[in-house]
Length: 215
Image (cartoon, rainbow, N blue to C red; front, side, top):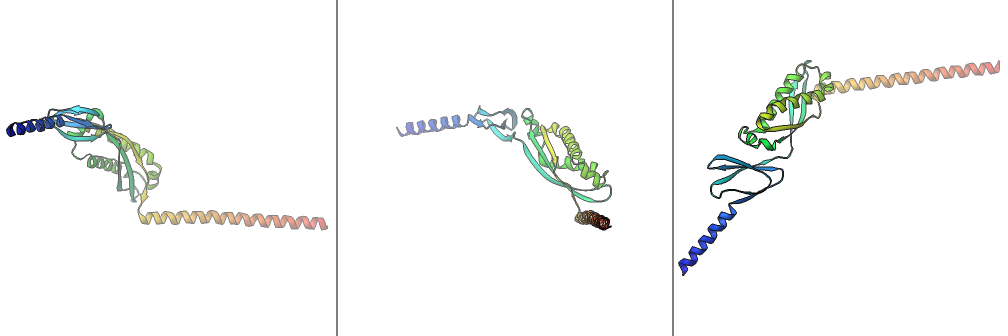
C-alpha cells in the first residue's frame, strides 16, 4: 500500500513538472529565444506559448521596446578646439530580426558606441568650432544614417539620434564667455553714448528754442 502511494505521488509530481515545464508566457513588447539541445529552435512572441518539457529551453528574453543609449564623444575640431558632444541614440530590436539581434551581436551597446565615435570623428574633424555649433542637426542625421545601415545587419533599428549639446574645452569656453561679455559691454557703451548724444541734442534744442522765445 505504501509503495502504491509513493508511486502515485511520484506520478503526480512528474505530471505537474511536465505541465509546468510545457507552458510559458511572453510579455507584450518582448520576444523569447527557444533552443533545443543548444540549437536555435524558434522565436516565441507575446502570449501563452508551448514547449517540449526537458528538451526545449528558454534561452533569452529580448526587450522590443525603444531603448535610449546616452554617451559623450570627445574630439577635436578643424581649428584645434577640443569639444565634448553628448549624444542620445534611441534604438530597438526589430521584431522580425530577433535571431540576428541575439546571435550576431554579443555587445550591441559597445558596437553602437563604436559606430557613433567613428562617424563623429569623421565629421567634426573637418569643421571649425562655429561650424560644429551650427551643424548639430546635420551631425545627428549623419550618425543616424550610418547607424541605420550598419546596425540593420544585426537586427537593430535606429529610431532617432539626438545631439543635445556642444561643450568646448573649459579654456575655450572661458574665452568665449569673455568675448561675449566684451561684446555686451560694447553694445551697452554704444547705447549709453547714443543716450548721452540725444540728451545733448535735446538740451541744445531747448536752449535754442528758449533764446528764440526771449528774442
